[in-house]
Length: 332
Image 1 (cartoon, helix red, strand yellow):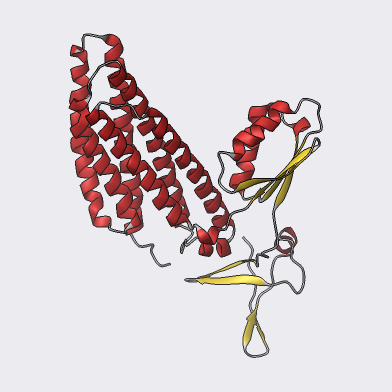
Image 2 (cartoon, rainbow, N blue to C red):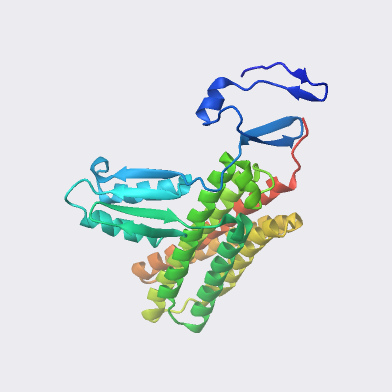
């Protein structure tokens, strides 16, 4: 940590020098402007963002070992906040790599193919954060996941399969999850971006990150329940005995997320109390599987119960974030 002295300038302002290394690494020069924000006893300084700046990166296929590695690189660059990504095909075998680029585009919101030649593909992220702030994306993820749980319960009650529809919606949640992670990373780096995203305090970024990750995981497990229950229903097995538990799991999930969205933190204790009861009921269901005559059917039902247990656990994790939000930060 460095210390700097404060000097009086002109009788009305105080002046402090900036570390040369930080100025150079930030690409600043004499005459440039800084954004300044007062945070209690602290000051936050950062370069003023220019609207025309588009962070770009070039990826050469010769430096990437496999198509799967390219997929990971493209997603990582998207999450890091790059707005233009150029994939250069400097090797002969490019067909599989091109397929990966198109597949990744379908999994990320706002990514468009701007140019494509035999030599390269240019991708650009065309997305206005101001039109879809983080809390709005979070609400959208919750609405989709909530509908997935409701429809799985309805399908089990009616004895029908909805596997393809649930799989599609789970994919939509994945897209929104990647978008939120991209937004939060940019918000942590530049507070000017966090204000556009509706994030008043950057300390909330970590909480949002955990919440959206848990919603994404919950959606995975709901999809698993839909797939396994569809298989059992197709084979003539009824799962209506699990409906009361599924409804309670649905209630715990809804209460945990909506308490954060509405800042109604008093509901959170209800989440923990209901979760404790649910864990006991799920244990009874697990034990009842020992009397199931078919080992195969018992294992399939166990898979459903495992996923429901995970939904409860992730919902509790979301509720814990809400408890943390309810406690004001100490003033130093």
